[in-house]
Image (cartoon, rainbow, N blue to C red):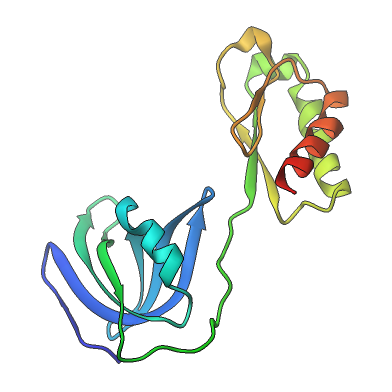
Length: 183
């Protein structure tokens, strides 16, 4: 394994990239095998493009950054500020595919939207997603108020497009439109 060091506020480690983790459509985390075991690191925004372009599962990498103690969770969190490929060892092929979290469609479930048919819209969304075979790619997230209650029910598509006064009959064309935009 690789040597590394850290103190109470920073770390400097070498390890093997196990996984690049995408959250809400953005690369946010890197999981490494280090001499201290498998650790999950948050990526600073300034280095995310470097990581996407140069690292893949199986790469050996040198990382450094900041540590923080989260008293609420009782955990130490790690945030990578600098990363570079370690030229000493590299593996020829990736061992894991980048993990992608499903896209989310938000739908208001507060009383005003429910009175205006949000329950039926939610069922129509579930049916349309299943009919298109998107169950593993798109998740429905029931939310609290999305504001502008008199224009409800509201849904927010994965690309952040907001739709108001949505009826169950509007859902299949919206899902179809979303699929054609992704293609």
